Length: 438
Ligand code: HSE
Image (cartoon, rainbow, N blue to C red; front, top):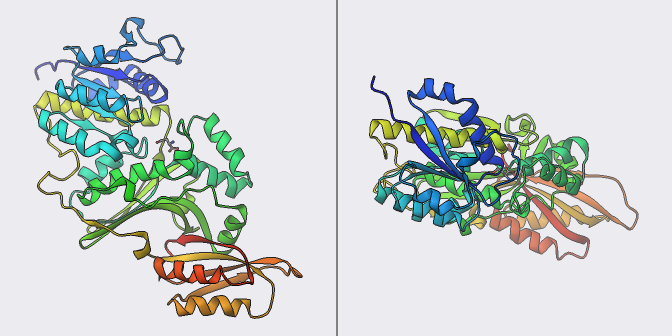
């Protein structure tokens, strides 16, 4: 076999993930060469901070604080963007693409919002965009959806795709930690985004879900239309009630395709404790994908962190290198469907969603309260599956929890608006959606 010329990579952003990429490219260089039949060489690293010790050995001469100069270097084949956020990351990517460089990025926020523009530019320039690291860190879910499950119409995706939120909910559930203490610990461990509101508010999961559902269903996905609810309002009381009903509370990113419509939503969700998704604890991620031919499949691993996310970036670089060597850039359409094969599906509004619901009412402990609530639910076509009422509170308020059978969210909202106006109801009702209910 003729020797393959080394593929030269410029890295922009030498933070947590960048450090993981450098470590893997350095420490697993031999293994990579044995697998690829050629070398991936680090040609330069751009970062604003040239002095911080990242705990990884790098030749100082590779480092620069001038990202654009690195992008402009003719000896660089591919640019890895690990700056995060919208600008200057977007400009860096578009400049690299315009100069005919292949690119790889972990930037879910940018791709969820500006993916079509970046992908169109890359397609025009005939270069690859690797984004394996943008969803679920080290889990190779992009490759799975684009290539491994190509035979399947994908009907549903359920993802635990924000490690920080999963860590917090796991700590709250298993150790009774407060939300604040668990968040502080997640930040100390480096899992959280620079702005943790993106993690706990569900925005980070929504970014990843928008990317996943676009490549799974072959439709454009408007990120701003993805209903997104975070975990800040999940209380120990609801975690406790969930357990009594046999459920765990997870921040789920859910996407389903049915005919010419699809849904994509992020919210705290009760899942039966006996399911594999409920067992996904700590900072781990998992993505459950249902294909019409393969049935249910599950992918589990670390969704954040230096080397797990670095592993995904290096996989993209390996694919880029192989495509350069074999002259097959563009072999797999960047969005998993050809441009002509993509079809806009209608995204369902949240009021159309059908789900089971957990409803926690805060009511005065008086006769006929339950009848009043059940009456309003019944009038709105909501059927009750089970009820728990705990304790007695002379003159005070008690929680009454109702699990419903499958119901339309619009009906549930209408019923709750009526119920919350009743004089016996003393606080707004808590609603948590339930998946996998009977
Ligand atoms: N903040 C993200 C998480 C990092 O907690 O999952 C990986 O995208």
